[in-house]
Image (cartoon, rainbow, N blue to C red; front, side, top):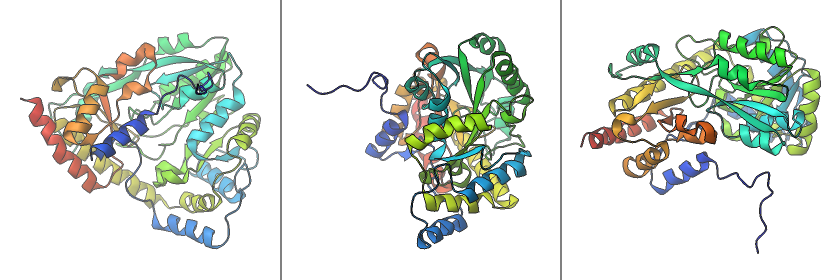
Length: 414
């Protein structure tokens, strides 16, 4: 008789990312599902990694992160947000934001503690809480038809003026009701995957006020902090009044510099929370890749022109894919950040995101993610009306996808 998984993981299935990528490979589909670029980041950063390997920087790094990288992370926080962070006591280098989330949650949650998770959510949040013995409490962003969304779409190159997108709204009353004496933490993701929402100062202030009222820790997942459009500004939750001493800010080298496989991330937190993170981190991975840490120092020192070019390139690709999806008959929500687009497919005659994404992959040859995977069972119906498409691809990849999506438009009219 085979052994069974431990109860803490027994309800976990294969991630939707792995499932859809495998389906894309099986059907030779263009993979717009998983959020990784099909191109490399800056050549100078690659050269820095190669140089570090050649120079013999290949043994275990310091568990908390190489000193030069922690100093570079502190300088980055000061440069972009005027945020002060002590490299020795407030910054920990981790193996990607995913490990940073896990080590943070394992380091601060006790069994029975509650964690508020805003839906739709990155699919690691809830399993991390469950493995720590915590109890997730879900508060959904609700899609609402917005004139602003359709106006943004009309501004996109070649976009259809008839398209209607959704704006993703947080209900203040629902969020307020989720806080109680058992609440230990809230996880906030801005810019937000998968909706592309960037939380406003008013929304973040509401979260901050509730955290202060209930003495709650905030984990702020900000891996898309530099991928922002339409002059949208990113605000760090940690910089709101009273939040610096109760916020763990998590970010990553992978998204901003297009090296997702290097798995270099970091946590910025006050000393007491940093201690908790490090006590978990040392037994999760101990340390992250040494040569890649040295290369990340180079990446974080890139000039303002790099970040401007990053935004310009992604905004062009966002607008191109938005147009292609709209022309194929989908209702496109224009993201203010990240490299994802949420698109509704009701007009094409589908009423289930998994069915639609499987059809899209097998019959059209384009893979997307069904976002119901990012919702709890309680609110899963909210995710069944859209599909998530990634535009972190070469333009030629997006052009091939657009050509295939034309078949969807034709087939939907038959």
